Length: 440
Ligand SMILES: [Zn+2]
Image (cartoon, rainbow, N blue to C red):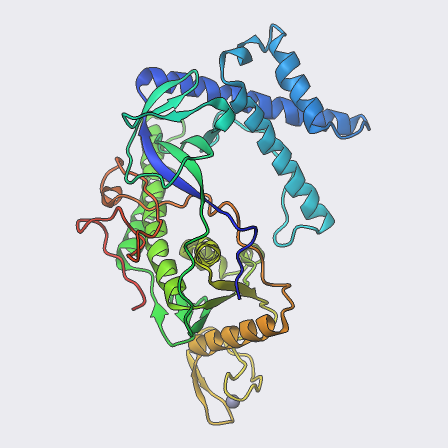
C-alpha cells in the first residue's frame, strides 16, 4: 500500500535570516504593500457581493488592485516593490476563498474554514512570498538575493537538496525573520518495506500510546518550558495597559511562546520519524481536534500538539512510502475489548485499566490503540479510502527543527528535518541541545 499522491513531495526548509536595519525597512514596506493588495482585493470582492454583482475573477482582481491601482496617486507606491510579491498576496487571497467555498459546499472535509479576513499590521506573523518569476537567488556567498530588498544573510543549518521553487520571508511575533524555501523532492526516498503496523491513541495521561504498549510522555523540558510560558503570561496580565513594562512583557511572552513551539516541534519530529521508520502503516484516531475545542479535553489536546504531530506522521508517511490513515472516532475505541470485541460499559476518565467478562485485562489506552490499529487495517482492506486522505502537499507549514540554542536564547536557527541518509531526523541538534526522548 502506498499513499504517495501525485508523485512529487514538496517540503519546506526554514532558516533564520538576519536582515540589516536597511533591509528590515525595505521588508516592512513589502509586508505593508502585500497586506494592502490583499485587503484591497478582499474589499473589492466583499463590495461586489454586497451589491449583488458576480464574484470578481482572479484575473480581474489582479488587474484592478495591482495594475490599475499602481497608476493611481493613492497606490503609486505599489510600483516600488516586486510585483511578484503582490501577485502572491492575491494568490493567498484566492486560495483562502477557494478553501472557504470548498468548505461551505462540503467538498472540503474536516473543520469549517472561515471566510478570508482582513490582514492587520498588528498581526503576529507577517509573510511575503517570492516565486521563481521574481528571480530571487541564492548567491555563491550564501546570501539570499531578493528583488528590491537586497542580499540577506542566511543561517544555513544545512544545504538545500535542490533549487527551491519559492521562498517566503516571515517575520514572527518575536521579531525574528525566517526564509522558508519550498523544494520539490525526488521520489527515491521510499524506505524498504517492513512488517509491523501500529495504531496510536491520544492518551489522557500520555502524549501518545502505541498499540505495542509503548507509552510516550511529553518530555520534562517541554513541560518545564510550558510552565515558564504560563508564568510569563500571568506576569503580563498584571502589567498596566499601555505601559512600557507591558510592552517588554509582551515581547518576552512572544519569545517564550516561540521557544516552546520550536522545542515541541523538534521533539515531535524525532518521535514521528521513529514511528514512520519502524512501521509500514500508521493509524491514528481522527479526533477532529476542532470539535474537541469546547470540551474539557481541549486544553490538553491543544497543549500536546496532537494535530501538528499527526500532520507530521502524514507527510512523512507520504514521503517515505508508508501508509497513513486517520480512523473514524465514532467507534468506542476505549471500551471495546480488543480481544473479544465486546463493547463494555462507559468508564469515567480516572479508570486506567479494566477487566472484560472474557477475562482479558486491559490498560485503557493500550486497548484503545490496539482497536485503532484493527480499525485502520479493516478500512485499508476494504479499501474504502474514505478516511485515507492524501498527504498534505506541501508538507507541514513549518517543517523545522530548531537549533539547540533555541531553548536558551532567541538566536535560534531553523533547520530542516530531512533524513540525512539513514540517520535520525534532527541534523541540527548537537549534544548541547535539548535531549529528546523517543519511544524506544
Ligand atoms: Zn473481552
